[in-house]
Length: 330
Ligand code: SF4
Ligand code: SF4
Image 1 (tube, rainbow, N blue to C red):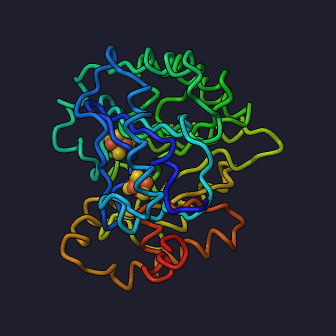
Image 2: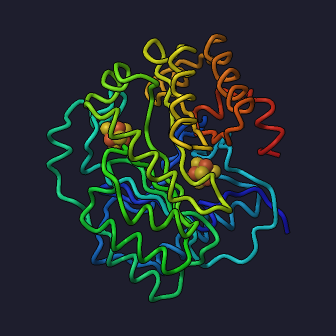
């Protein structure tokens, strides 16, 4: 029987640095943050309990009742969700180490403190997931907050997912080249998204707080060369729009050119999250100029033959609320 739910409610889990949530989405009216556990206790983690606890959410969804945290989320979809009892969508936000220092990142205020935190170690519980045969390779594994390639267990973790047939999307600063990522791209199982946010060296330094423009594009080019013939959309660079900083067409045109030069066929964009959160809190719409810029980016991507990935806030910027409701929230 079809009902409105989402892939995270049915089969997902999001590991933050010290707690566990249902998903990692924040940019919609409900704001997300359904807490599954206040602590991330790797050694006493119980997958059966995680699956048992979500039954209540799924039963409610079948009755048309969704958590308030899900209000107007674009992940909601009405369809036949099939039989549950497995995990296929996992997100990691470790927030422990990063070799960039983006002005918009919540670690920016105390970079030293964040970068000196212990690496967390989720490998044992992921091994347990596979041993218990509770994983299906039908969803996506994502790495985001913090720089995943600097995690001590990164190679082991990614290799484990690759061996078990998973598809991964890895967000990286792009400053540290990873052979493991390149191997996953070659196999067609990894999509890597490198954080560019600029089209010039000057803007790169201003947004990222580090000097890494040249190495970033060298690495982007190397990853692009790893792509198999049958799929050239596995390497993307992302541009986060930061109002009054990098939101001008000239900078964006230069970013598009750099992607062409690096052999990249896929690009992504988002809007700075804190700025969007302020708008939401004050119940204000996106400014018309920014909506125009979003259309310019999407149209330019189309004209130049790029595949375009809509990230969360950008999605809300580009599509109006009514259209969103009609599409996803019947
Ligand atoms: S509907 Fe959105 S907020 Fe709710 S669990 Fe799914 S992804 Fe998270
Ligand atoms: S690359 Fe990601 S984790 Fe690192 S500073 Fe930028 S936003 Fe934060």
